[in-house]
Image (cartoon, rainbow, N blue to C red):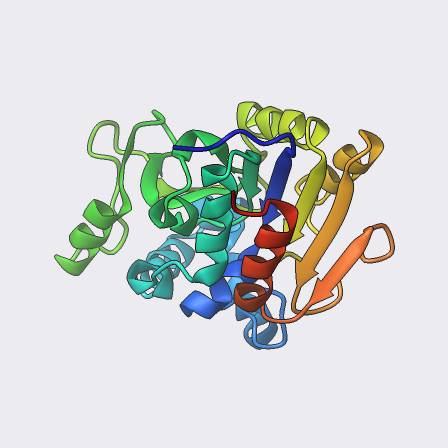
Length: 246
């Protein structure tokens, strides 16, 4: 049960928090798109809808995603402590791996800005299912599984390039950023908007901006504090500093 505290902390996480769980980031030195710039085409909605070959490659990439076998690391677990200590106002994440929820953060406090890879979505009728079920169909011999209800194209419930964010999810994240005392931007280069703009919302509302990342970010000059290094090592003592245990 969470205890009461006067400190309200909102968190934004990016791919960097999951690298210690064995999931590579996208834009880092060893990132997916750094090593293979063409891989970005697999996650662009126009390419995906118009090219069956891209869809087949995209599904195979999803099946091989290391997130399926990943476990939450000390960074994820440290953020669970924020909620347990009564300080977590909300957590916006750019990640699609659902490791925050698996670590123990309450799902209602997690705003999945870019959706998730666990669910599938029909681009025609909007029906949702499980990505694992679609992958089973691929393993059974279907190259490009279609929606079983309407026959339209299926995709994972992730926000691809060229798609807009869910306005309700984004609005909830904006409110959380505007209602905090400390805003933690963790594991993100803070170059992708509107997610990075949550930093601006928080600072304008008077919050302290703390950036935690393994490399430089676009908001280092704006931040009140910048912590550089291993996120899974930096977060546990940072949480203890911001919200000491009773």
